[in-house]
Image (cartoon, rainbow, N blue to C red):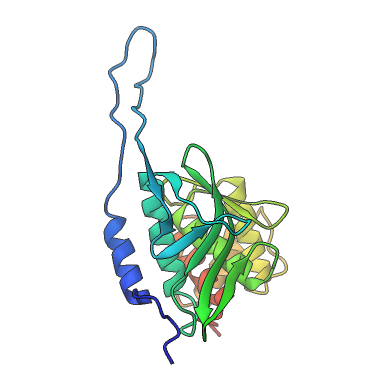
Length: 235
């Protein structure tokens, strides 16, 4: 049975987003003047989109509407969703809906749900109110692609635009502690020694690295996504 009735396969979604991720939009720096000590960056025009990759955008109330994004942010979101889908169970279709709100400036998104189809039924691969391994896994996928990721009290996740990478921000450290405890069974993980605990998970996955390095952080978030969604146990 074809679990994905939509015209784009997960493979094509991943390939298309990877190609799109090579394109970025940057502002033009203005020359310093006596009135300012730093260059002024021109504001890039927003782009209006009703999808992320092939997934339709939905507001939390279920309505569909085109949304204004910063172009580079929308490109990163497409690459992130392809990454999430490529590491999800094979029985899941490519995501068909992303339920979210986008900030007026187009540079931040609050994620409520990701939905896919299976046997003609619409299911949630991520739901904000469902604080399970899939929730932690999805947060891992966002940390893999964005520098600013914050889980709000209601379980929704606010993501800010920017290039991926480990910065040592409190939100990254807090996520690493939660992932070590909830996904990797390391109940002793602490903020003070999180890198040591994350390093154990990386070694267990056969990918030893310093979790606080660029490559190590990318690897830790990737294996945590796969373990949380159940596509790899690393046992």
